[in-house]
Amino acid sequence: MIFLSKMQHNNTQMTKKLSSLILLFLLIAGTVQAQLTKELKERWNQMHKSKELALKEFNEAKFGLFIHWGLYSRLAGEWKGQKIPGLGEWIMYHAMIPRADYGKLAKEFNPVQFNAEQWVLATKDAGMKYIIITSKHHDGFSMYSTKISKYNIVYATPFKRDPIDELYNACKKNGIRFGVYYSQIIDWYDGWDGGMLRANRKMADLDKENPMNTWDPDKTTREMYLQNKSLPQVKELIAKYPDMLEMWFDYWYEGEADKYNTPQTSFQFYKTLYDASPKCLVSSRIGSGLGDFAAAGDNEILSGSKMAYWETPGTVNNTWGYSKFDNDWKTLGEIIFWIVDIASKGGNYLLNVGPKADGTIPAESLKLLSGVGKWMKIHGEAIYGTKKWELSHEGPTNLSMKGTDDREKNGFNKGFSHEDFWFSAKDNVLYVTALKWPESKQVLVKSLARILADDLSKIRSLTMLGSTQEISWKTNPEGLLVSLPSEKPNLNGYVLKITFRK
Image (cartoon, rainbow, N blue to C red; front, top):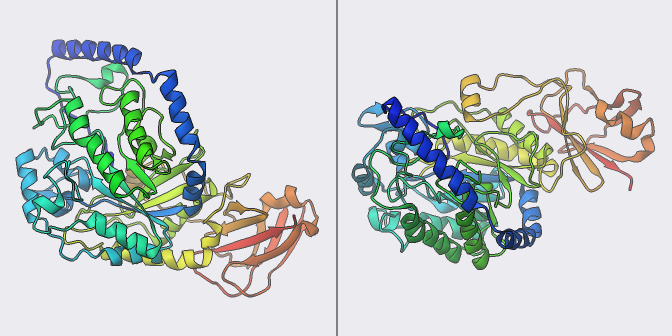
């Protein structure tokens, strides 16, 4: 995933000013040249609009599994006996590992315990409807059999198997949709330095730091990398898996005046996929505003999105690729909150696990997935296929999830009140989800006061998911007063299902 790290520059003041002026000139010039033509923009609009049914089906799935797995899993957050701060999959960047040294890890990467069927069954048991796995991350190593580069798991490792292919087949067998992550711009092994060795992006009002390989870059150019590796591999992947749900591109800057990416490049990636598979969805991290759905920031819940469809990528701890140092696991209650809150706002949740180098998913991750699955078996009806209601939440607890750093620093310490309710809707049904049982066994849903207006006849039925006991309710000027049953289908809250007369 994307993590921004501060680079230390020892340039003199004169060099800094000169570099900044050069960069600013290039950005201004690039902006003039980079605008997508009216004709290409219209072609993109037509392609995007043709995916409406695919987007609807994607949104109805609501919940998927993200998998970050690669050579970085072999290092597990450590290089030459040193713990390397930062995300596990970014260790090549943070430790500034030379390409030759990093490439040698392939000879040690032998995940003999990998079992695609087990991974998919764990996904299915968790109530997840799709899987997205890293086919190539920023380290440039391909986790599938590619003809474009020998730097791949089948050719360069003793494993000699294609786990992406095995996972795809297991997904097909078990009714799970499949997609891949692909880092299209950043590639520390075969990519370029981005022209940033002496430039300071901040002087041009771009607050992102350089994510390229500036310590040991391959002597290539942007166009050589795109035309000889990145675009061919994208074309190769969609040819192998034309029925994939989505391709999850990953690039941190989505503006139109960007030095690394251009609208023309983004359009080329988009059209390459569309020509082979018109239903394949594309994340907004393709850049230039040409995605089919918005990929929220890492571990960020959007309060609103300009795009009709969106997805939050999240983690079970703090890192994405496996790190033996990251044991800050989210609780089951926290994961359920993410599922419920995102669904109430109309989004999808893509929850990540980082398998170990031996091919196993950490036990802590599997335990969380199992717990989520038990909750989803009872309450999934309030998640799958739902849309946001006129209100997403009522109650005293307001949580703003602003990203991985925010969660890592501040934790998740707020308890929920029995007055907290999240809403989701489907046809003439309203689901009211609570994450805490009240001691009094009575709750008041205030947001229904206006809708009911003391008219009980509008409600055809009111039940609790997972419970067979009858529930009594009545209205008063403050809202809908519900008396809950004594049985608890699940300790992690409950869901009321209110069916209105049509």
